[in-house]
Image (cartoon, rainbow, N blue to C red; front, side):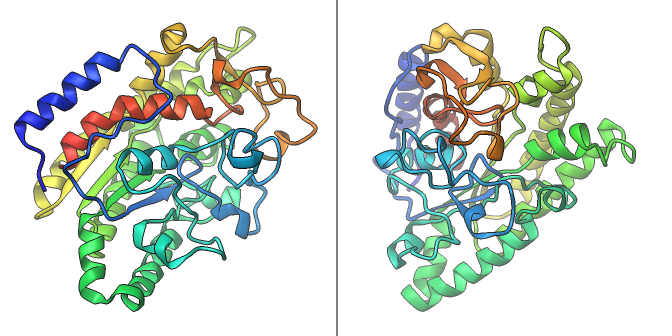
Length: 358
């Protein structure tokens, strides 16, 4: 069901009234819209624990990850509690937690209401997951095909097609391309200048959207690149003595985002009966970085785990001390958002996402 103009106006009125405040609950703006499932692809921002079941060091299934999750349990989510995927699936009115597709205990009901295929450390660039030994997008696509086959057996072909066409698909996959493949390692920087690399990444993103569209996806949201140059680890590695945001990295990401937004808009016009949304991951985080107290935060240049400047995945472990109050931190570790900021971000982008997809 499409949102009426009145409903859209109400959405924006509600958004404007709370945008300057931090809410501990995600907004739910879809009372008149039924979404059967949410399905995610990409990297650690949407990985719900798939990396637990593959041979990689890019894992988060140990303490202190998950310290604020149910019973303080580390699940493979790359944060202290719930992830971006959890807050999106909750805000879209589907369920409270999004499970990892590779979880051997996954239930039939979980399959019907959506899963995550994302893998921490992955990216659009096919070389990125080979560096981190994680699940590439091509394999995530194959997992999606397997998932469709399972749905067919559970609910039948017609019901499966209905679920696929009405579900919301989230993709986040560019961060590691910029941070790992182009900046830190950097295998791609010797091959491509920034515009050429961005053009390649955007084309890979567009191709991925086309592939899931062929399989039945009709409401697709693609997260832009975040301000990679402001990640605590990148400040430490390349931000100098003062650990400033790395402008070159942020400029590269902004160029990618501009190109991606334009190409997704063009793609949407050519995909019949489909909506393709660009979700700004960059500017909301920059607003928080520049005005942390407005959101009840205090620390934006360090993570809560360890020193906050370098610890991530296996470096953030049970021997690492954590900050006294992670609700004051933008970042949980040196790359990933704290649970509190996951809530803030989803609440910020949800109105535009609803308007774009419905």
